[in-house]
Length: 467
Image (cartoon, rainbow, N blue to C red; front, side, top):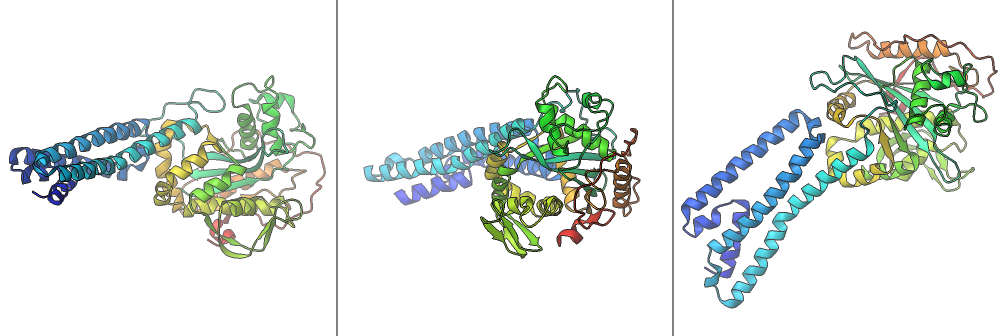
């Protein structure tokens, strides 16, 4: 047997275990190796089909640990397979020079074969560490959560409400200010979703009687200067003697927003706005319809301009598309922010996520956190896939619909309830989670903003954002 032939048969055995042994005349061993490989391949196919039917199971701690262990075992097995296949071909019969060349090539082959298993282990560990880092074992309130049952992970709820926050902890600010606040109310059966956007300058929000801040601010939140909604998190965080608890900022804000809308906020997630650009870059950017030129940077937009039209935007451009107020206002950028959310929901596919997972994990680890329990994540995946193909509508509580300095709390709740009912009109499902708490009274202060045109009722994101 020549050196090239020996290397070739050894390489073939890495793809078809037992090939080298069959070539060497060791038929029994060759067929056993081939049979074991066939059984392992069949098991892998079954495992893959199970994950296809329940993609969320891939996020389980047990699944990721099994993948790491399995990949480690396979790496060692393939290493041993190549070495024993090489030895079965009797390399000692080759000339000394041929033995050296064959040994080097087989060593390279061992490394090449083990590399994918090493990458699999690294990816699974990264995923496990990321999910442990960004999720919480307990809800923000500190109350022990109900057990998550596979047959009914939502504990009988028809809707689940997520508070999505964009936090700005820039260098010129102290603490976290939540400049982007959106509640995504999702129908579990259909995936139909309503996005409720609340302006950061909504004043004098009320707290439910169960909140410690209700006693502190019985007539509405009026701390931190003008008593703006985006200051609630900061105030609660800096007054532990009032709120208490580890996640008091998140709990205070979810209390205020849930009470304002008349919804039970189930979970929250907060994104560091300045880390958001890295996340968008990790998924390859977003295609967004830019209705007019958007200037950004400083007070006068001197850093750059995002031109009008359908654009493929990178992370920095998406960030400033959703944040810029140059020649604009808070309410216009709120409209752009919901288009960013919609674009992500439509354009970030499972394939995109898996292909760019390492980059996404690196970006998300330091800019994202949530109180969603780790055990619930596997059930969020199928829900997210439903949302991706479902009807998404949006409602902003901005002037002239709602004057932020003089909010009509009853009107906000009525509009919220109606938007949910309208969202479910196509499915025939009755809206759930209507408020059971007392309706707050209207405040006495006068409006002070210039009204921005707005129409009553939730609108489709396809219509608003040109998807």
